[in-house]
Image (cartoon, rainbow, N blue to C red; front, side, top):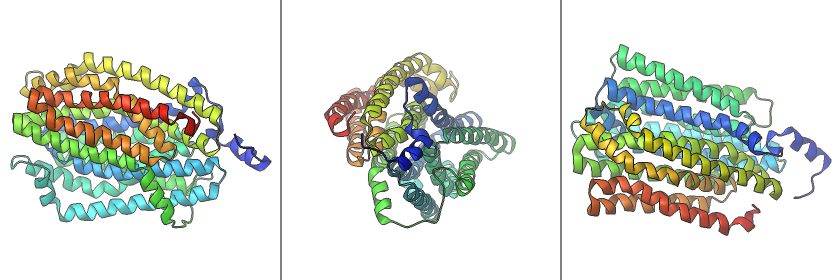
Length: 453
């Protein structure tokens, strides 16, 4: 560890990231972010449950058809957030507090600007986009109705993604958690009001989701303008180097979301070809269930990333080793628990979306029995990729994300159904995650000396 001067030592002691962590304190620190991500996942899934139950399963299929566009928006926001988070936490660890604030302000402006560009482009080319995503004539009006409303809220979506990450870095994980709970409850209530009481159908679902985006975005702006803490909005100094590094360092998260967009598209067209709209509805249920269960790993990785970045910034290898040992232990235990829950509870999860007498239910339950095995492996895969992002090595993180999704999963979707039909579709995710698990282990061990963990 590098020697620290007197003034620096005082500042480090005031920073919550500079603590000597044990398993209990680390979990307490990460817990609000875990719950925050679970709530964010829940209010995403709530849309699909309300749409499936109070509109119809064709509308449920339509949400999955347009999902790639949402993946791109989330990917851009997460790229800025994760890549910028690594820079900001590193500079905070090195004592460069004013620079960290300036970079933070630039990244917030960048996220909002990206959202406005997506809003303009989506509004102009929405018809062409919906058909390009594979919507049938039956699904087109549902797709356009949902996406047309959601585009209006993309700037807020991008900003709330960045704020959700950086509340942790600012030492306020509880605030991110509280806002996610409020946003989720707001979305739940408004879904009922707009869909059930007002009869707005799928447009009501989009409107409820958009209002959920607005709450963390607006409160985040107000909080960071008024904040007197280690991180706040200040007069920005535009640095293209910071923008470039943030985008490159967070590219793995963008790759992950782009891959999710591509694989969702491939799943949709494969299931449409094999089983029609019912098949698309069934794969929608599995994808959203997977997303909800994976929020545990995503939230944990987000919660501990500032600690990893901070320890890397001040070269504290002793604490880094301790933090990573605790993290891997948690991810291993959580993976086993999620696997058991998904294997035993799959039919109950599916029943939230479709009646147990429906064809959609039958298709989805048969797939869940195979799909569940992916949860044994995906937790470590998600954490290792996020760890390299926190270590400011976006190249390795992007490679892992690219291989896991574009390479292995896309290849599995295209190849396995040719040999095993619909069973091949369900096998694609477990096979991809299983292969990726061993690649992640190799990368973790190979780079341990370089990063001192």
